[in-house]
Image (cartoon, rainbow over all chains, first blue to last red):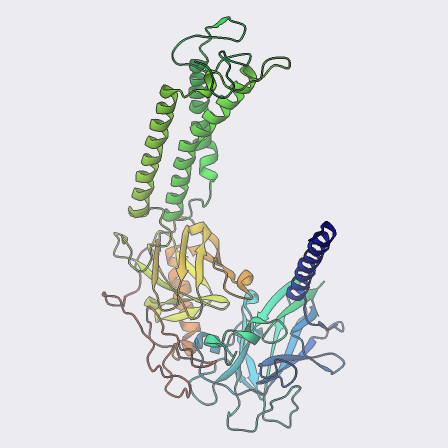
Length: 221
Length: 342
């Protein structure tokens, strides 16, 4: 091969490697769009989410997922949201998925919320025994803040919503709880139920992906 | 003897290498009767005699992981001994190198400093070096092995079959359960409650029973000198006796998935009486959930059938074929009495 040819091949390989690296970095560091919640002085911030058993769109249409509703009442496929610091956060979760017994019943207890309580369809509760009834579908947990709320499951034999965003016409449970936001920072949150159906031990896919069953609570000053 | 590399018959630099056999001639034919070797040894002995105690008594008490537990203190002692042994070796190299640079460097207009006596083997020096370093390595091997297996030594994770167990019969067992991505702790002697808080009493032997509900994690309590793999289906035991009050950090030290970096929390060492109060209050506070937990077991059997359970008995679980959870029970009965250490 002539010298010019070797040089061209070398440059092409370098460009390909650099492009691959740039793509990998961009992919690994990208995050879904954040839903930003602003507070009215003296009023709590209201964060609304939903959980759906299968997202129903795109290449991961069978993946289980959280969605977040923006302050403009638009459902966003994101698990990244921002709240102000040292503010009461009132969370409402519309839970559309079926439940099951828990791998670890420790996450069946409400902890870290105001009063260590949550409400299920308007009724206050502290513990869900996942071995009876519909079990637990998911949890909302911020481990660094000690927050854990189990989300009661729906009857798996019901006609459950299978494409997000779901509406309240589908079987659902409404779980509400409140907590105080901490100081500024970025706090990972997640579902602790290994709900990645089809993955070994249920811990792959959506359980390992921000925007599905993991996210960030960003706290702004 | 002519040098094979240069064919020169005399040393080719402005000096000679250290000799233990007597004076040598320099390049200008002068006899160099300087006792380089003894100078270097003397300087090395003095420097080592100063550096070792300075390090041991000034820096030693601050060497990680500190003295928060007997195991951490053992690890600190071992690190200090290793450094005390290594310092003279480092000083020997540095002093020899510095001495050589000052005394035997090539002069600007001098001959090429290759070959000559320094290119030949020097049996006494080589023998001394080999004997000295072999003795040092053998000592460190013996010391390290002894420290690893002796009670309260530096062996952080003692594993599923500990070589030694604490002499005290007043051991507090705490089960450490890794899961993506947090640690939970079960206290079998306090009704088996499970919590995200790790609280331990001071001056009490703790047996950490480390396991996992999913992938491999690693339980690392840096300040207590405890580090043990959390493997699913395995009960890795690590012992430590806290001897200082305060807080410590618990980290996962095995890359375990998306939030591995966030898989840490803080624990604390309390006085025994305060610990008893905390444990009893926590047992009461968590009672309404503890009654739904399975009875305590050293390990739990994973079930890869689906997205849900299998580690715990769940007769209503349509996915699980596992009706019972306990995979491995130790030969000894589960502790049934609370710690009474005060």
